[in-house]
Length: 409
Image (cartoon, rainbow, N blue to C red):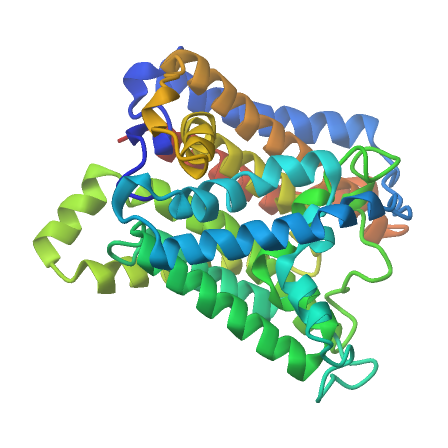
C-alpha cells in the first residue's frame, strides 16, 4: 500500500500479536476446512443452491451524479492539488474503492454498476449504446479484459514506485477512465460489465449479498448467464472469470508475501525491484489460476472461490479500512488526518482476521460441494466425494497460506 499510510495496513504485523499460537491457528484452519467438507458431505446430499432473480438495486442510481462529481474532483485534486500526505487521492483509490467496495457490495449487491462514473460519462456523451464494432451475437462475453485491467491496477498499487503520490494516482485514474470509455465506444455499453475491473469486482462480491439474493449463497449458484466450462466457446468465458478471481486473490497474497523478510531480503540482494515485483506478482496470480483449473478438472469451482477471495481481502486490509478510510474523509474535508487516531487492538484485529478467513473458506467448501452434486447426476456419492478431495486439499493449502502470510512478517 501507499507509504504514507499506516503500518497497520497489512494486519497486526507479526505473530506476536496473535491471541493464539500460530501453529494452533494453522491447525484450526485445516480442521475448519475438513469439518466443513465432512458436514456438507453427510448433511448436504442434494444440490440446494438454486439461482434466483436478484432484487433490483435501482434506488442506487440516484447516486450516479454525486459519485461522478466526486470522481472528477478526486482526479483533479490528485493532478493539481496539494502534494504529499495531505492529498486524499491515494485513500480514495486504494482504500475507499479497492477495499471499501467489498463490504459495501457484500451488503447491498453490485453497487458499482449502478453508480459507475464511467457509465455515467458514457451516457452523458451520447455515445452509441451498442458501440461502433459490437461483438457478434452469441459470442461468449469473457472476463479476461477485466482480469487484465485488474492486473494492471494491482501492479500499479503493489509494484510501481511512488504509486501513493497524488500525481501518479491522478494519471492512473485519468488513463484508466479514458481507456475504458474508448473501449466502450468501440464495443458498446456492455463493455463495462466485462472490461471495467471495478465493476466486475463489485459484481462478484455482490453475489454474497443477502439483500440482493433471496436465498443465502444463491448468488453463487451458476445462473444461465454464467459460463459452463464444457460448452464450447464458453470455456473462454469460464477461464476469464477464473483468471479474474486468480488475480484478485493472488495479488492480495502477493501483497502479504512481498512484505515478508524473505522477499524483501531477496529483492535487496538481487536489485531491480520493479522487475522482480512484476515477475512475482504475475507468477503468483498465474499459479493460483493454474492450481484452481488443474485441481478442479471438469468441475468449475470459480464461484466457490469468491467468498475465499472476499474473506481474505477483508482480513488482509481490515486495519487499513479501520484506520485509513476515515482519515481519507478528513483529508477530503481539509482536516488533518491525525484527528482520527484510532489504533485497534492487535489481538482484536487478529481474531477478526482469522474469523473472516475461516468463514470465507467454509462458504467456499459448501458452494463447491453443491456444484459437484449438481454436476454429478446419478454418480455414486462416494465417487463425488473422491472428485472433491483434490479441491479440499487445495483449499487447505489456501487457508494455510492466507493465515501464515497474514501474521508472519
